[in-house]
Image (tube, rainbow, N blue to C red; front, side, top):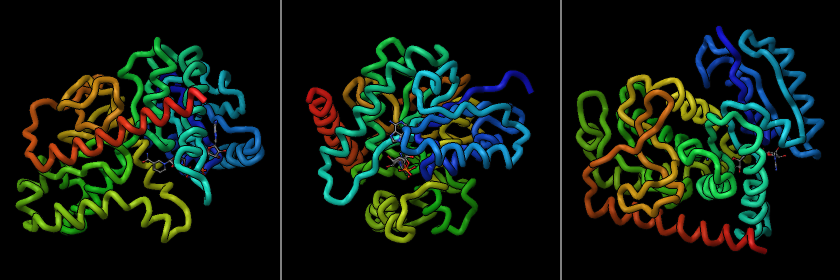
Length: 328
Ligand code: NAI
């Protein structure tokens, strides 16, 4: 019971938005007892599709859903929200250069930054899903300078969950037996899916799998290229797994860790593990009382250090490209 929590979803008529809205309304993001009000933002070309989503939300008669604010006005959408899920963006289309997609997306995040800073609750917690997720989150932070740096994150939990799924399948154990995996760096193919600190039941992942060639090779590429494999099979990008991972990210951050050792989150670096301060980089985190912190003191072997550095370098380059797109 209690006061409803206001949750913003941008790009709400898109694939992930369509999967995510009912999950939030079912209590998968904030728990089975927490009433919610959904704030759904779209751009004018998708306004009619958004009306259709609203009709379905009405028709599903979710007991926890106490209201829907559907709009194409960012100020209205951001008003008094407690949680903000930024999914709105432009996909890369045939013939588009990387820089063109980057430019469209980072400019969306530059413009929404002032809206969220001005209109959301001061305690708002943000997760950026739209790609380039880490760099969009960096831009959001840069153009919302009054917001707490710790309130802006990006989603790498899908990659984390993909690691758990692959290991559980390989070991033929339930997903809940796998813990302590880490995604370092960018939500891109340079990410480093690190199993060195993870466990399967009472064993380490390396003991349980007993095949380092697989863990250092095929396992990593499967996780890194999973998004492309899903597009190839479905002709659409991952949506249900992305939406479910957004719920996990926010729930573990805001509600509690549910016994997990750590979770991977793209957060603003404080310089931990040698990562440039201010960059949005995926780290192993623990959350308590609605605050995340980066797990300190993990032993990093030379191979891991190189992999962490490669994705760090890509993020520095992405940041510079993004900033050059804004200046134009
Ligand atoms: P989609 O194209 O189906 O939906 C995106 C929606 O955003 C569209 O309905 C569009 O009208 C809307 N939109 C565009 N500009 C907007 C703006 N300025 N304000 C509000 N809404 C706006 O795409 P889908 O499949 O839902 O994916 C969304 C994003 O999430 C993409 O950038 C995708 O690459 C990314 N993604 C990230 C993942 C992650 O793990 N971080 C995983 C999967 C997808």
